[in-house]
Structure formats: C-alpha cells, structure tokens
Image (cartoon, rainbow, N blue to C red; front, side, top):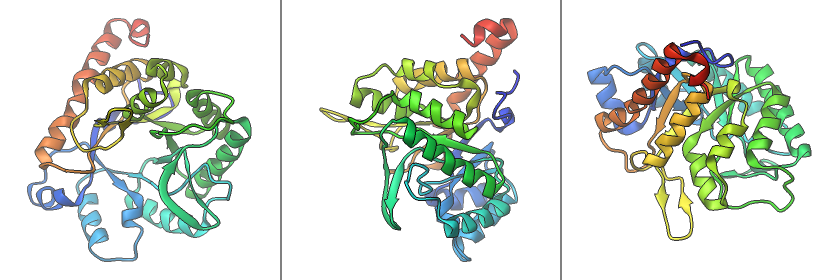
Length: 290
C-alpha cells in the first residue's frame, strides 16, 4: 500500500507508549514492538535514570517523541529555552517527527499543565500556524499537531473544530496527529457527528493516529486512557485509515496501567483494520479510500 503522501512512515506500524511500569519487562524480555512513543518532557533532563533507560531503549527500538507542553495556541512565542532542551532530546532520539497538541496552556510563563481548547477563529489559526512553523524550523524535523478532547467551547468561534484544524495545518504546512478517541469524546460532549470531523480534515496530512480508552459519565465523556479502546473508537479508526491510508498508530494507556502484554495486545488490534485496508487497496485502490 502506498505511503500517506505526507507522513511516508508506513513501516512504523503499531506503537505503544513507553511507561515506567513496563521498563523492567522491556529491558529484560526485549519484546518485539514496532516503536515506542515517549513524552518528551519526561526526558528533557541533564542525566539520571530517565536518560539511562532511554538510551537502552534506543539501542533496540525506534522512538517517536510526543510533547504535552508546547502549547502551539499560546499568544506568546514558543519558549526558546524549552526549544533548546527539546532539540537536544531530538538529536538524542533521532525521532522522525515530533507531535504536540493543538491547544494553549500558559500565559506570561505561568503554566496550567492542561490542554486547553482555543477559540476557532482565523486570527487564532494564523498565530498558531506561525508558532508551529517557528518550532519546526528550529527543530528541523516534521511536526504533527494533535486534536485534543474538550469539555467547553468558545462563543467567539466562527468555524468548526475540524475546519480550524484544517486551517492551521494548511497555513503551517505541517501534519496531523489524528486522535480518534479525542474526536469521539468531543463529539459526545459537544453534539456533533464524528464522521463529519474525519471527512473534513486533509487526509494526506495525517502523519500519526492515536487510539485510547475513555470513560462515560452521566452528562459527559472523559478522555481517561485507563482501559481498552471502545468499539465506537475502533470504528472511527477504521474510517480514518480508509481515508488516510496505512498510518503509524499508537495506543495510549496512561492510568491503571496493566501488564505490558495486555497493553501491547490491545494496540495490535489495530492490525486487523490496517490489514483490511491493505487488502482493499490491492483489490481496488480508488474504492479503498472512500
């Protein structure tokens, strides 16, 4: 199956997050894993156990960096000190691309440590794209921005979230980390059709996909990453790759983390859907992308 014309990393297959409870198993048993995703901020240190483990992982596995505090949507420019430390890690891991969230989260150096939604306006899209381009040019690697799950909306918005995402990535000329679980969570919280979202983004810019579990409450859904992926999310994943093609996919499991085998087995369920798309592509390449 031909690579997504933007990401060109079809051979990356299925990855999982590198998490502390699994360190011993991975280093001792050396399981077969396509790649690991690391949270950049956990390794932006000068030394110690985190980098010791990371270097051992890098000896045997491919690693992709994922950030949680770049805050592309901030009104301020990206922190140059943060970028310097991030670039040092990028050189260490040789990550083929770097992702972070389409959100804001700090003002004047004060950090909320949360992924806050933005008003979906053209002015915000222009500033966000400018920040993304600055980060990309400084780090000298491709950037993918991730759609976040949200629980509040701005009245000032003058477009949908997927229209805003499309506007930003086209202006920034960057990729998308398409989190299909976040799409599902937000669609239930804000009453929109998640398939409209998937159909509305530039599919050739989808460089990576996230799947994860969520928790249903009486009046809303929360993005918890603490149990297996639910069927509606797998169906969205299937729809996404039929549009974007074979795309590097990662399972997020960040709380109540079970054994390595359980997490890895859940991630590998994505192969069923990728295999079906590959088979369809061989039979009818045009129909497979519908």
